Image (tube, rainbow, N blue to C red):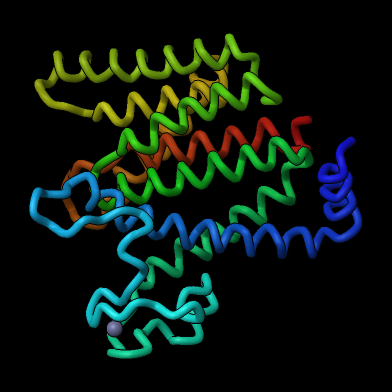
Length: 271
Ligand SMILES: [Zn+2]
């Protein structure tokens, strides 16, 4: 056993509260980065010639109103937002609360997974998967978009992890990726043939392919079932709120389903 693994088992076994706290701090830092990805990636994809250059790193984090670059103490996940009471230190305009909620949600999810998953490699894989799924869900929710820049690396990572120490046989992961793509692709054309409408987007096929690569083809029926049920729940909630049927993104439903199944398959309940 390597010294990193020994430290993992010592911390998780003897000092679970400290392990949870460290996981939550890591989650908050990752959540802060996810906030940048969620804000900037759709703008980067819609970048028009002549507009100022934009990347995940540049320009530095700044206030969207007065444009002052944030000092280090204004950039501490969760703590800075609370200390500044959600307002810019210079012009006092509101800092979007969604940035705080992304950091808090990521911190809580990282902490929950640290409690549930007893293997260091699987826990690291779960943190990576949930980070990607959170970014994809929120971008899809706000922009109806599942960027290839996230779905494609997610698929390759799933295959790579299962080629190494993952829980799924590599051949099952490859069949999962192909079958995941094909089943939604078929559903898309069937629905389009029957109704003349587009019920799903190509991003959904790629996301289910990625989840198939992470979970293997055997998980696909459960994945589709949980995603379909959460889609029905969101659809009914939307009708209840607005009084009419409205299109909504399917990416968050697939993501919720994928995260639940990955955590379930890798948690000590199942091992
Ligand atoms: Zn400002």
